[in-house]
Length: 425
RNA sequence: GGAGAAGUACCCAAGUGGCUAUAAGGGGACGCACUCGAAAUGCGUUAGGACGGGCAACUGUCGCGUGGGUUCAAAUCCCACCUUCUCCGCCA
Image (cartoon, rainbow, N blue to C red; front, side, top):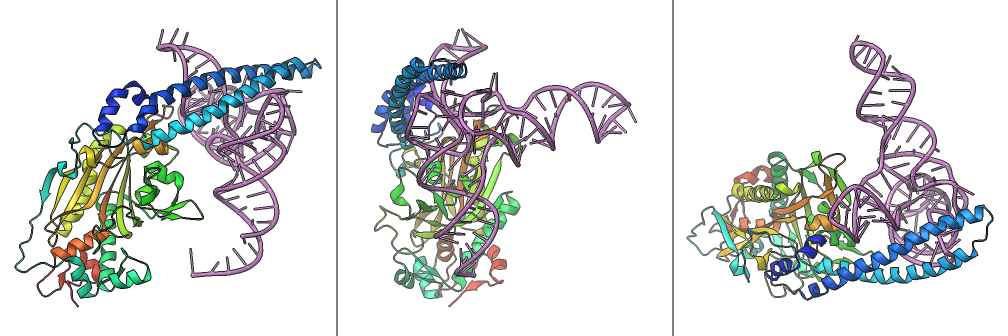
């Protein structure tokens, strides 16, 4: 959510900045009308309430002194009716206004490249050597199926498309990656480990910005108004919803492993094979709560932490700075880390690191005090994948494959895999 | 899932329609005094927030789990929901 006062004071400027995102801004047209109407009604109802409070005291006094208060009561009956009418109208205006504010995306940071499509994303850096194969590299789903470490067919039978059984060393590899990443972030990067609920309520989904706009992307539990989390970002960020933290608690760094669930509405026909786009996948998520002045430096650190995983796994990647059109709804600035996939002959997103500034904090009411008696300010929240596990498995299978169909296990993972060096059939 | 109880400040807790939520009382925390210092003791402080109006000082409204309702007036009465606790059932 944007700062109401900022939008009010710089309406044209905000409008122009949001336009760079290429989103539909028709809702913004009603901003000034609703904002003004709202303040008008608040003024009216509060004046009447002030009067009511005053007279109510008087009525109490009259009653105590056994004086006749009928005149006053009659008068107040009218005032109360009027209050009720105005409050009803106010409620409806505030609801509209709130809904409008919830659908406005974040303002891009000044350092974000302006662009119209994903082709305008800007490469920031590359890391690692792309391996030259002396044979035709296979796609990871073929490698995995041939090695019998992932079973897509049976998952389709048991559940449906875009699900997978991991089996044997495939399951072991997945689990090794989870542990390797969590250990790294906890021991080397100073994160506190969180294991969150996988179901969250509507308020939490709204707090981090998945709702109201993207309800169709989420899996919903029918009876409960609960949602399967699309990322651990949702429960972990919402841990501190409606809290006022003290300055010395900041920065907070959480690393959370969770399964993630996405309906992938609108992705029909894309990445239909393999581990790249599943309805359920595992991910290690990094979440930061920081003071506003620290958030951009933190974004760099956070991105570095995710990159470190790829470096230790020796997987080539590049970091892209997302342009205004590709920022997503909530981010003020976002880096995607893309890993090299030989069979695709291209880089694919494996991590997304975002600074939301106060956008989520304002929705979720996450604040802090600089001084014990100070005025609460919104924190800045950030998060990034560190990393998506399924896509990491795909990257390892493809980059570490050998001509005979076996796959070398990256050295750092071997202790997590019973010191095995290779996955063979 | 069934039955019952409870949600008031940092914590415990009193308050059952107007008599000051300007929230009793207790605890904790902080400050001051006493002390060489501390303990004990005494005195004092310890609602915060949101949203309006105002250049400002300031001022108004709303906050007793949440949302509605009744009433001239609600912490107090009514309805729904949430959370916690106890017992029973079920269960990893």
